[in-house]
Amino acid sequence: MSVATAHRLPNATPRPVRSTEDFRRNRQIKRNVRLHQQIRDLIAANPTCRYIGGNAAVENIAFRAGFEPHELAIADVRIGRRIVTLICVPHRIWDQPLPSARVIDLRFQAREAGHAAILVPQAVVEREPRLGNSQLLARTVNVKVDATARMIVLAHLIENGASCLSELAGLIEHVDPFGAVLHLVTTGVIALNIEQCITPYTMVDIANPASATRH
Image 1 (cartoon, helix red, strand yellow):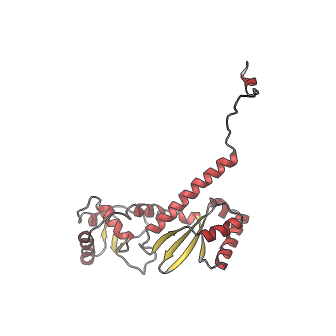
Image 2 (spheres, one colour):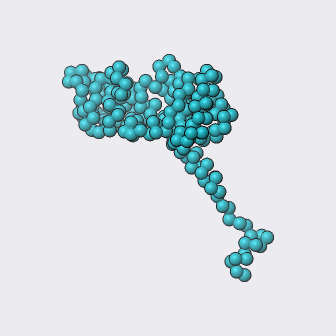
Image 3 (tube, one colour):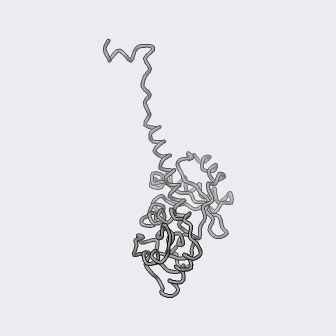
């Protein structure tokens, strides 16, 4: 029997073929998960913000507007005493006139429902070196820094002014001295310019809340 006629047998099980639509959907889901993680990293690196989680009410509004759950990344963020709903929009939606118009209408509906919704294009989330710096800082959020190490760093900055990251790391005894200093950045104790790539020679100073580009 030839291979060409084997697939016609009644008991021959055809090999499952993954459709293009399923492949595209799974790829979009993975990208959405990554976008959510990037948002969490950006927020974790900023001491003035706190990640709360998804917003079911706005997600339901988005679903009624025709968006699938994996098409947008929606999250609530606390900034001071205010809760802001981020609606993060992937490139494929933001860069097309009709889908982007629907997203703008979604923001309007969310605000009408009482949510402080703002649109955030994916390009803003992925802007470098801010994203890479935020991902580095986010990995130090759970680093433990004792009071002695914290006071040593602060005393040095008070006495000497801005100092490079490696200099501060060399002052303290810690299993991860660089991580310990960067952890103090995430808590708002000290600050660095997150718009420039973080290196051992990055300058660090006592936090200045008035600066919009420092964490």
